[in-house]
Amino acid sequence: MPGENRCAAGEFVPLEPRPEPGRQARPESGAGFLGELPSYGPPRGAPARENTAVSGGRHSRPPRRTRPGSGGGGGGARRISGDGAGLPGPLLRRRAERYPTLVPALPFDSRAGAGTAGCSFAELDRRARAIAARLGSLLSPGSRVLLVYPEGPDLAGAFYGCLYAGMAAIPLVLPTPGATHTVPRAVQRCSPDLVLTGTDGWYALSVDRHRTQVVEADGVRVAGEPVWRLAQQWRPVGVLRAAPAYHRYHDDGPAGGRLEAAMDHGDLAEVLGELAQAVRLGTDEENIGWIAAVHGLEEAVWRILLPVRVTG
Image 1 (cartoon, helix red, strand yellow):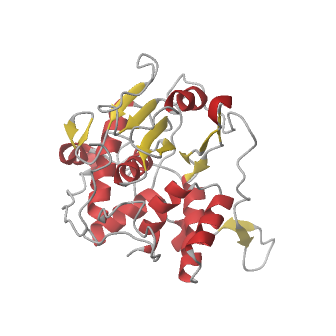
Image 2: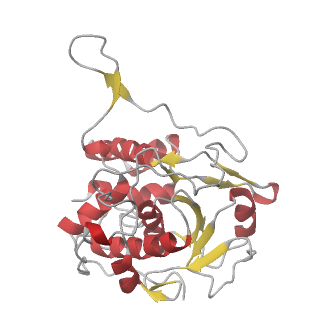
Image 3: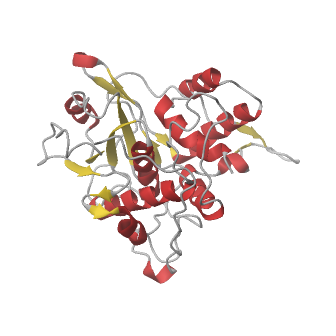
């Protein structure tokens, strides 16, 4: 049954060796996911997506933080660097390499590991690589992907898979696996290039397959192919901080829905840095959620990203 695919805590999943530079399919030779990364845009001839909301106001996050330059002269402002500058995708890769059996979790008694549901770093990374490999064979970087899942490891793997593939994730978090009545409305409002779901085989989504691709993906198979095999086929994609990473979607019932402007990879890194600092200072779970909401992160998303940020 859908929703029952959970990770075993402490499960060891060995990582495959990194591919040689000459074997990378894209981007250009020498461009790695963790090294010097090139920019990317929409496919040639395709109109660029406007970074605005489909309906409703602009994204509500505050301006990016800067600090004055040091030394003499005019000073100026520069982006804050350091630990908070690490992007979420590369961070998971590093965690999986260094602590493969460690299980990311939050220091709260209730729902400590709800976002990743007991997946080890290695297992979460394997799921993400498998999904990224499939997405990369179907779409170009920068594409929008609607994630139709209940909260849990399948949603976490799909979200990180989008980050690995350089695509913008739009989570549509289901209260239960079969509660898919909001999907047609979300597809109409968000205009995704593809829908990822773990429930299509059990509860077929009401989506026009001639206009929007639907791919079923969970912790065992992605589009019918074993996760372990696809994970080996993944090749890193160059992703810049300013590339779109996440859209928050609000379902407003029969009246329609609202899609917020995209947060880029750098935005996610900065917000996670603030949340991690709040955790270190002993901030309680309720206020962590409030801080995340102020910056535009829905609960299901910060519960996926923050455990990876603070564990290890």
